[in-house]
Length: 502
Image (cartoon, rainbow, N blue to C red; front, side, top):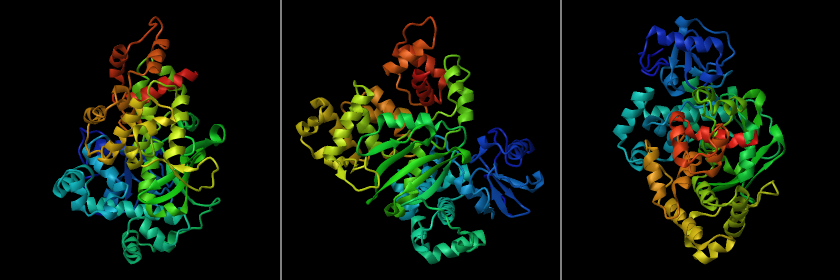
């Protein structure tokens, strides 16, 4: 097997080939430690196969192992994915830096339509810069990274759906079935049909599996989304652990629906998708993973936050809590503006009126899901008094239109490497969007783990209640206390809100 610059040890201070670093990897591999699922992959020279650290096969000898930071690096070194642990299921191990921001876009299919030059121009970099950044971080070129993602996604569809080969190849981003077959066979030394299995389908749609690092507090996440679900657009059905999240979907000209439920015994979420959304499965899965915060590493976050006596009791009680994201940034931003200075229930009611009055009707198998969310162009073109007719002040209606124009101008399409401070400044430049709203949008829609809406009265009251002898907690005091919670202040906010139910 070829060597790669990407088989780096866990410690930033160690270097490739460092024995102490290899021992770190190997201990995690021997323990089948789920905390490191997606953090690294193991190439085994005796088999030519690479695995996740949780793979149930017999642990190989250390001398046979090469450790990689990404599946793409393992495949570039000549290894094939394991058919048992299925590397394509692994949660991502992404950081808030330029390389990982680019990685996220490529993993969502950014190079399936655009060439490298146009993609690079769109994100404000040269193709040479993109190549250098990815080679330095992952040891592979942008084309190699995109190719691996397409192949692994195609492998996932082969094993989990009954899609025809043509549909499957195009959904995975290949330009032709012939190209897909040839690359699959040459890379994996198997024909696509050899690993296809009959996947049990339940009702209409496509069933896919999305892994996470346990624990995952599905009940808390589902309850949070249920309280904020916009009637007509989304809903949460069922009770307790049997809850499912359902919504309508309009993505890149394709319309349909999705349903997300929990499979705790497998540490996975199950995603059911309307067949009409097959052409946009790659970006759709990326959005769902973001909405349900599937890349979080709860052990790292909990270890950091339990060091604070204020947070420790609630973190220990709800160890699998995540920061619920948003399927669509524009939707969440509109919902955040509607939630200014009103209760959660009141904002949900008004959001439902907005969807019903200005959204597009749709047909789904779910009686409660009747509309798609209004397009930014629709809200931007409405007379302010018409928009205010849903029961909001004229100033708030004007703010909604400003958010819509911001979306039309590409405001929610962040340049890779954008900092939290830069994003907050952009958001607060929108008339009617203050600090709380900007932090909330950054936290949930734009996925900044250190965003923190310290102006939230609920957070201030909860922080005071959990700290005996401090009857009140101002925004300034809360920000000072929260400085020790970085870089996970968004998670701290969720735990503080969750503590209200203790």
